[in-house]
Image (cartoon, rainbow, N blue to C red; front, side):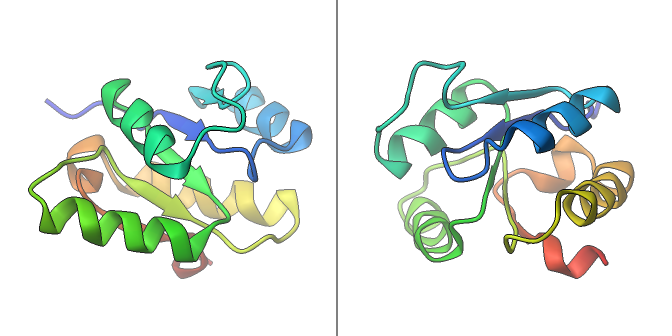
Length: 119
């Protein structure tokens, strides 16, 4: 059975206004700071998110596209990666809500999604 998508915001994406906006809409979100993983490398964040069955949300397109490809090529799995341009918080929230209301955790398993595709 599919569950609602849970997010893990990396260091670049853990903007206070974004966190508040998502939580106000009952989106399950946690951050690098809350996980006590500040300053850790991107593979550590992806591994943590996978263990927690959370989708990593990041503005770091290049590194996470590369990590996604490496993981899949090496038979490793992750819960999902959502990458976004650094646009206004309202735009991010609207796009995320469209995505989260359309896709399930199962749909996103081992998937890299570009948030710009959602509006």
